[in-house]
Length: 136
Image (cartoon, rainbow, N blue to C red; front, side, top):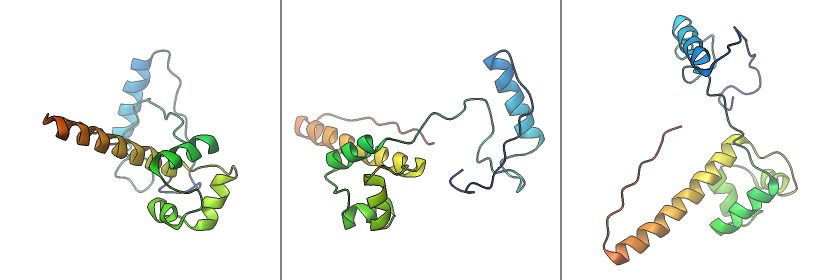
C-alpha cells in the first residue's frame, strides 16, 4: 500500500475452508491476472494467502527503539535516517500513527545494530558469523 497510497480497492474472489485451498486460489488468480506485472493491480508479489501481520508500532515502541538506537525523538539525525521532516517526528512522538514503512525501517535499523554488536563480540573471539537476511 505504501507504493500506491490509499487509492487501492480490495477485490474478494472467494472464501476457502483450508489454508491450502486459499493458497492455491491465490496463486491461480495471481498468475491468471498477472497481478505483479499488470498495471491494473497494485500487488508487488503473488497473492498466496499469507496476509499481512501488523507491521506498524505504538508510540511507546517507537520511542523505545529510538532510545536503543541512540536517536532523539525530535532530532535532525533521526529525521534524516527516517527520511521525514521534523514536524512528522513531532507527530509520531505525540501519538500519531507510525506508518508501516517507518516501523519496518526502525526495526531493520535496530536489527542491524544488534548484528553489529554481535559481530564485534565474535571478532574479539575470532569466531565466524553466518547471517541470513530474508527479503520482504
